Image 1: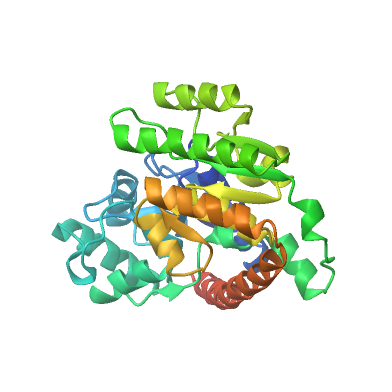
Image 2: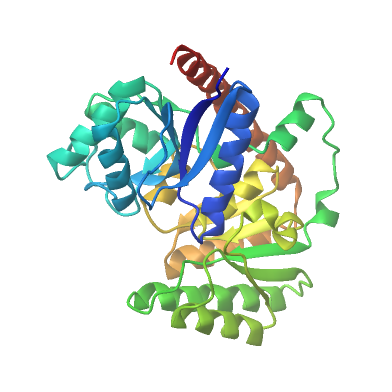
Length: 355
């Protein structure tokens, strides 16, 4: 019997967060879909050349007010090939959301996403804002959360009650810091980033903290802005890590980190998914959408917001019981989305069996 071929479209080019989505997404489909399926990874910024029985679009902010270039490749393929398209944990693009019922700016986008939905009726999204937008256009999406929410090893240990209670005061000693991908065309964000790094260093000195702090770049340290931030952070005594090109979960320094503070959504998700505290600076609709789905300490990425969030972290680090209470609450939230995701994956499996 020939294996069914499923093309799994992912967006992992350079950003370590996109690789985390890919890694955890493949873990989900490998664990919950039948073994007689051949999963073919397809880089979705390229044309789809493979013949397949179905497409899976795996995570990422692919839904924009006008058709994303990656979606154009899918559009061309499904116009020529009548195959079901399954969406797992998609989200809105960064800066497009103004009104739920007036999101899409062209008919092509509306036609495409409706066609995708009608092909399988299996469309899951990563946050409430995305779900509400799609509902306005007749797309009834499941709210499963992002595939990156789910670290199956952590979930397994919790289900088996194997998680060991640790002393928070002892294990919060390796801090991971993230910043926006640098771009000198956005000088305001660049200067905010320098302020964030500076204020974090100032507070560690004022508080007499001896914690190990690593500034992580999810994209390559290649732009002038990123290089400048990296050199400045090193001058202040931070360690610097280029984490691009592989998943956050594949990097030992990040895995060993005990707490995250910064702007990168999937660094935040990674820490929360492994039952570690995280403080998020919200920069766009991706982070806003996440905060409509999971509650974690956050402020806007402004001078005032940066100061408030850094101050909050240092205040809470003196009474670390708050970490344990928050981790317990967030863990339960992720567990509730995992229940929906498992049910969704069973429905995906039923559909594929009928193809």
